[in-house]
Image (cartoon, rainbow, N blue to C red):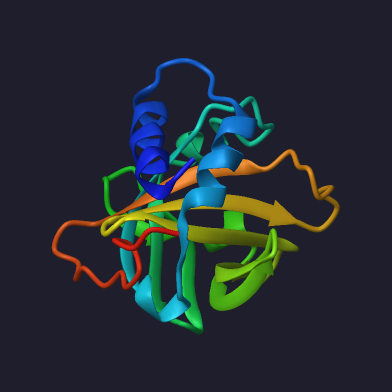
Length: 169
């Protein structure tokens, strides 16, 4: 699968109402361009793929909106909405916040969010100039998964800084 096929299939699966195959998401992931931490700074709106992972639906229950990467040392993984609809960083759920690093995942160094209070890593790759695909990984998860797959879209009004997103892998 080339990067253009991966992007098209990603968009189809994202809109799919039913379950999505983790194996197919892995194939898409392999075709996408890696990201650099400094290029993903800003606010992002999130969503999940329905793969049957145990976390599926839990973020929606917490009224998860997405993630905000203020700086490399200040990442807010669980931006949620309160009862009034206002955004806040849910530090309790995340047991703190996070930071951004370059970490090797599946043989490629890519932007990774490292949680402060949990042994959890979120790895990111570019789908296009405004969309990231994410894979949640962590201590105790075998190399073959199961992983939690999600996506982030740059929140409106955010700068478009995605070197390499338009390049083929």
